[in-house]
Length: 300
DNA sequence: TCGCGCAAAGCAC
DNA sequence: GTGCTTTGCGCGA
Image 1 (cartoon, rainbow, N blue to C red):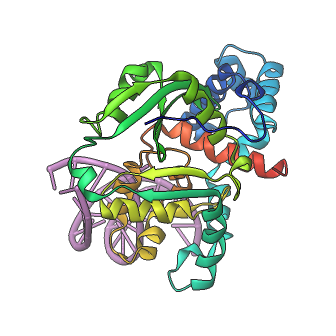
Image 2: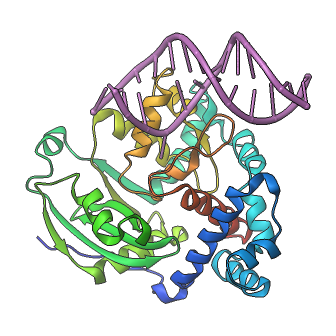
């Protein structure tokens, strides 16, 4: 069996993306601003605290997101999140059949997915060949995992949280019986593709394999229908999969989503618009939401 | 038991 | 009244 990396139809490569150090500064800015949220720190204060200049902070944000830090930070406030929810799709009620077929069908063109059989799940990945590798992406060092059927996992490596070893253990440990084959070059192609969502086209859909329990797969499928730049709540997802009281279980399932970003777990928030937890760090969740917003503002 | 929850109730401005 | 915290319930693994 060959494990082929996707070919980027646009011919673009990773080096057209912002350098990884950009995300690091963005992430630290987000962390600083979140910690001091009540004190409403200024950018000058943030820059001073992070040991950089305002001009550098400005330039970095523009390179990374295409927005000034000020606009970007506005985009990740709770008020903005509330607007995402309120203006959001008719996601909030399962009765909106029309709404369902609209956006989800649209998204289906971009991401083809299939669920792994329960048997394969029980065997803990036995017989699966998992290609995997690391590459730099807009949200830091990224671990991609794939089978011959498509992308199966996406995760992040943070130095302060155990780095590559931890990310690998976290992801490959879910399928301990699988055969793992390292291929960083192929991983780089996956990562480049994933973080250029405008390249997910009908004629070349991003292929994705969902490996989980029945309930988890239903949650992830529903999450896939939430469009770029929009948001939903755990409660709404619960209603939409026909389990209106299972909001908390939905939250747990969202948290077990193996394909971060592609299955947009960052678009799920609490009913108030507050961001709740995120397996790969709240700052990253916030960064993803802001980044999507920025892409939308650019007209992308 | 534990979680990326929710809504109502309680309490403090 | 608004906003923040606490409480009881809830579900699937």
